[in-house]
Amino acid sequence: MPLFQFKCPQCQKPTLLGGDGCCVNTLGNTGTTCGYELPLYFVDANHKLRSKITKHTNPPPPSANTDWSWVDTSGNYYAHRMHVIESGCVQLNLKENHLFLWSTPSGATPIANLYYGSAGTVAGASGVYMPLNSQLQNLHHFYSNHEPYFIHIADGEQLTIEQPDNSRPNEYRVCDNGRLIYSYNSVTHWGQRYS
Image (cartoon, rainbow, N blue to C red; front, side, top):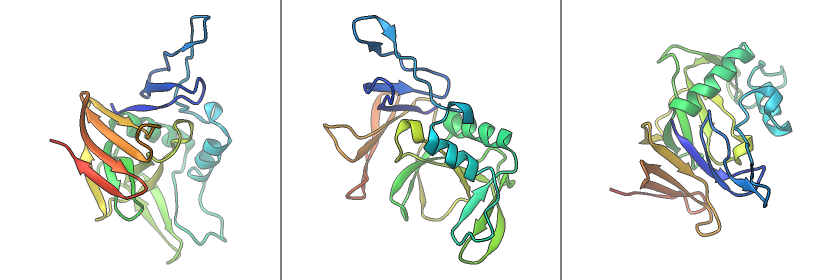
């Protein structure tokens, strides 16, 4: 399961979270634990994440002219959210220049619909795509098919994804079992593998 080392939106300190954990930072002198958890369901989400969930659980409006992906039921959306958080592999999108988690819960079988705004056509989508360039509380997914400009970076049970911080602005890091294996600068679009 990939873990996220991001700034906690509740206590504002660095935290390490997975889909089933909570922030264990201590608040002030009280000894209370922060307890922030990744928002997994609509009721736990902030306004921005709710709008993304609503978008990707409804077909596009007739006026849509951009690409739009959706799944027919919100229950499937939440199941896919958990699947990509727990089992996603880290990939780099060379076209959009960001890291993302990718999973295919049903293999090549379509799990969602994908509307191509430029062509006005609908196709099946088999992949769950979660960009990693959002704040922790805004991490969301949508649906896609694997593209030639997606580059596999890493997968495995001991992955940690680190968000940029003050010491390394714009640099995302991927670690495997505590060892740095890949870094990516979102401004210069430069990535480096470490052996």
